[in-house]
Length: 365
Image (cartoon, rainbow, N blue to C red; front, side, top):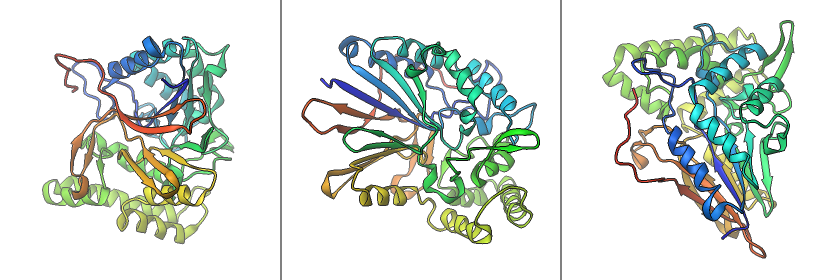
């Protein structure tokens, strides 16, 4: 048994939930009770006296796909962010009740690293709202936020990050996640987030698989074969957004046309730069032995020379991969576990939560 355990999850993409008879195309998380069982298992029984930290490695909330007054907005004030987060809290009471119960047990705590889909968590009042919901306003050490660095470091060279910073289109300045404008403090969304709110999210009402399927170029090719009308309109909307964003910039976006070309290359040619950049950081940094990330939704573990390990925690939502090397649709409840025992190096593993045996599961709308 470990005397200290760190559990890393990411990319739950909680939205506003679903109601009977009212499908929600923006909701992708349906494992609320599985997550409750997960936390109960690691906080009771043989783990009752173990120090356990749950590390949320970004995109726990999918605030980019939560409309405000019927519209998706890319300039989010603190008031708008609070409204969206409150609706997510109401949509997933089981999840947040489970978090509350978890942190109020002995030696249990949560650390939250915001990602590119929940950048609104940088607002101080949003953090207070979340603390209030889990009963930690007077004990913020039980539910902490990492907002000063992309990386959260554990002893023994273990580093956790969301991973969006490895992609040009999703990178934002960690020192300026919020900016002061004439209308007050607002989110400083990167290009990728603005693309989601302006194009991807509105099209999800028509095609809920948008944002679930990877890689995007193969999804476009599939659509040109089987969903021609919708795909052509989607491509047109994306192209229009791309041109207007870079030729008629309304935002402080450094890099200009060169950054635009880099984004096009990253998405159209290499599909995603995340894994390559993450493993490069791991290999070159002498102080990192284990790098754990999320963001891509593709769970994996890679071992390198000098006993270095890269782990991607995947997602707990439905994931459709059109890449022939990993073709298929799945919902794997994957996570990373980092165990510490006296006198030994930390043991990092990629795990899959299976939970209790259930005779049946309800199929979501």
